[in-house]
Length: 452
Image (cartoon, rainbow, N blue to C red; front, side, top):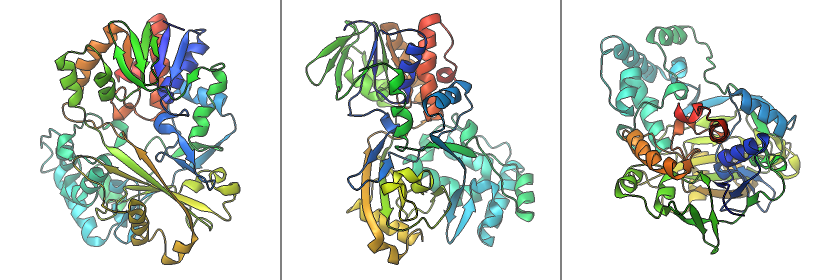
C-alpha cells in the first residue's frame, strides 16, 4: 500500500484518528507502532506472576460527549466507576486533596503559615506580578502553601525548576482557593470535592490497556503494523523509512511521536525548526509496581507525597481499581500499589537498587509495615522515556515554529507529546485530538482541543 493516510503510534491519539476514519467511511489508512501492543503511554503490562501494571496512574473521566459515547461503545459495561479518594501524605498525617482546600488538617504551625501567606498574597500583595509558575504559586497561594506543598510537590512531579515553567497551562489542573473560603473551611472543616475526576472510570479487564485494545475490533483486520520503528521521514518525498529497511509513502501523516523525536527524524528541517525542538523540555518516569499477598489495607485511590526524601511523588492502590489486575482476580488474597518517580537533567534518580528505594520509601511513609516484606510477591519496574511534556516558559513560540513547518508538508503532530501540551494530554484529550484532526481533513472543521 502507498499514499493515503499514515498514522505513527497506536496510542489514544492514533487509535482515535483511526476509529474516526472508519466512522466517517474512510478506509485508506495504516497505523505503524514501534512496540508490540497498542496504548502508547496508556498501556499496561502483565508480569510473569500474573499481576497487571499501568505505565502510570491512569483513570478515565471526560467532559467530551464524543469520548463518553466512544467509551460506552468500546467498553460497554466492562468498566468500573469509582468515587475518588485522593489524599496527600503530609508529615505524620493524611490531608485530603487539594491541599490548599483542606488546611484544617495540617499541624497547627503549618496551618498558620499557610493561612497567613494566603491572606497576605490575596490582600497586601494582591498586585504581585508573576512571570512563571514559581511566581504564580507565590502570588496565588502565598509563601506557606508554596513552602509546605506546592513547591516541593511540583518539583517532584515535573523534575523541573518551577521558574522554568509557564503558568498558562493551569486551567482545571490547579485549584485556586479564596482566602476567605480558606479561613471558613479551616474554622469549620469540610471536605471539598474539586476537579473533573471526582468520579472516574477504570476498565474491568486488562488495566488501562483494556480500553485501547477494545478499539481494535472497530478498525478492521490488520490495521496496526507492530514493531515498526520510524527512523527517518523525507518530508519532500513524503516517505517514511523504518528500522526494518522498509519504506512507506503517504499523502498525509499523523505523527504521535514526541515532537522532538519527530523533528530529529526529518530529512530537510531548517535549523530554526531544529533549534525550536531543542527548547522543548520533558521528564522521564519510573513506575514501580509492588504486589503483596494480603488484602488491601486501604480504600484510598491514590496519595501524593511532597516529602523530598520519598522517591515517588504519587502512589496508587491499583488493585482498588479492579480486582482483575491481581492474580486470579482475588483481592481477598492480594493487593497492589503503583508508585511514580520522575527524573530529568534537573532531578536525578536515587542511586542504587531503585526497586529497593521505593520499598524503603513505602516503609518510611507507613504505607507498608516491616511485617509486609515477606508478603511481597513481585516488584515490577516500567520506564517511560517521555512522561510529562513540560509547559516551559518558551514552549509556545517553539511549537508555533515547528507546526508552521510541518503542516504545509502534510505532517500533523498530535497527542500528549505530539502536541507537547500537558494541558491536553489526558486520554480523552488525546483521543479527541485524533478525532478532530480527521474531521478537519475531511470537511475542514475546527480542531477545538488542539487549538485550545
